[in-house]
Length: 82
Image: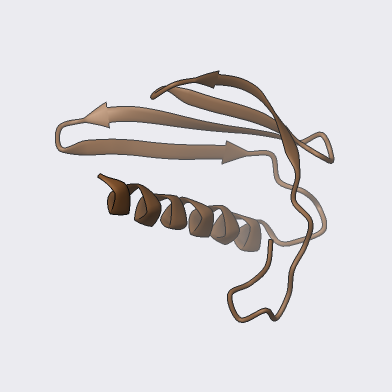
């Protein structure tokens, strides 16, 4: 992954462990940390929540903001195809 302004980048890999369409995706990152994203339908939309195991190299706020950016991009993508 790389910042839009190309100021920094990093490798990001993982293996999907479980996929339940329209419900949940879980994966294990290359360093063994777990990530789980759930989808809950509500009136007029869907709540998407990602819970991740933080790593120790970067501040939790930076990691949270990174995951939020991924979800924001996902939202933009999904809204453009419906």
